[in-house]
Length: 192
Ligand code: GRF
Image (cartoon, rainbow, N blue to C red; front, side):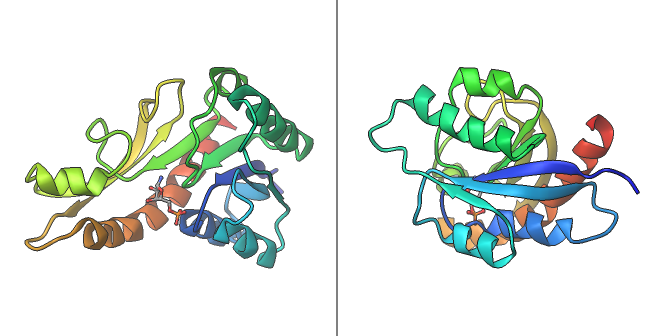
């Protein structure tokens, strides 16, 4: 039997991408298993979802801690769990350079825009405002510059007349849930 790569997922909120990755990992031929879900927000709804799926969780508020100090705490948890790859899934914290260096080429993120367009926040509103014909999402390797690492895969959805940031986000999210688990699998197959 092949050895599955051990994944840690970092979340801050709802965790619907995390849920899609957990669901995909149930397949026998999936090259990864999720060993830890960690959060900077103890109230993140996704933590309960992960626990219900039988996955170990770790949560600690980042408030009052230096960025590097908080990242070291998360790093120690990930390493203790044997994590080999990290998937950021709605993790709303910028990671310190030291953390990213320690996991070079092994952190992926999903961003709700067609990168290099619209790094940062309010991606859907900005795409609509610009009159773009399409929005979408990108899975990329995380480097020290925010939303900037090499793009591994993208999915595009049309922007329709009357779209709001919310209606576009809903349509893009459907694609995120397909794209992220699949891209994670192919990336791991080619690098593990
Ligand atoms: C997603 O739109 C993702 O692209 C962005 O944050 C959102 C997280 O949603 N980075 P969820 O927590 O995965 O439901």
